[in-house]
Length: 66
Image (tube, rainbow, N blue to C red):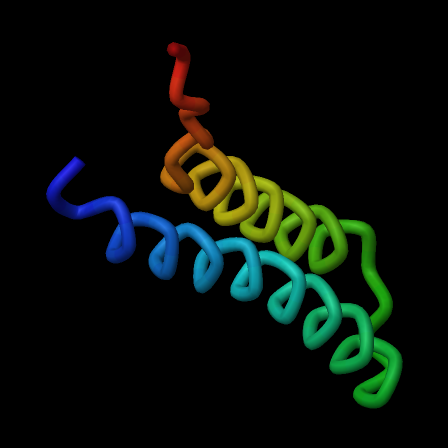
C-alpha cells in the first residue's frame, strides 16, 4: 500500500486525540467545577468518535503467505 505509513501515523494521532480530549475534558470540568453530565457526555462522544476513526484508519498487518 502506497500510503501505509501515513495512515498509520494519522491513525495513531487520532487515537491520541481521543485519549487527550477525554482527559482534558474531565480534568477541565473538575478544575472549573462545572461537572455536568452534558460536558462529560460531550467529551466522551468526541473521544470515542476520534478513537474509532483512528482505529479504522490504521492499516492491518498483512502477513506474507508462502
